[in-house]
Amino acid sequence: MAELIPMPTKSAPTPEPLWRELVGERLRHLRHERGERLTDTAERAGVSPQYLSEVERGLKEPSSEMVAAIAGALDQSLLDLAAGVVEDLRDRSRATAEPARRTPFALSA
Image (tube, rainbow, N blue to C red; front, side):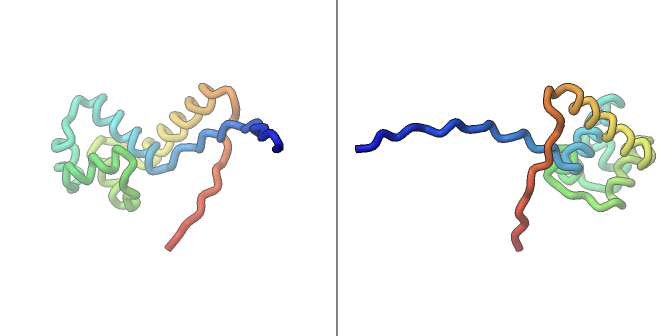
């Protein structure tokens, strides 16, 4: 019988975080900096605390109107929010030894 020899495997590259995850993390960071509860920010933004929590955890793909409302409730413009997300992404990229790689995704209906 032939002997089975395992093939060397490459470790899968770490996928880049999704935009919604980065925006959510940034919004949570801004809210925490202000010392606010979910209910405080959500009320000013006109969303439910549950929805805001899901946005912060990257579980929801909020519309541009929702992002603008939440950012506004945190006294941030969309430009400020986007610039902060970009800076967070750059910091992550610098922290990793290898450059970020794109991971292909398959979409199904």
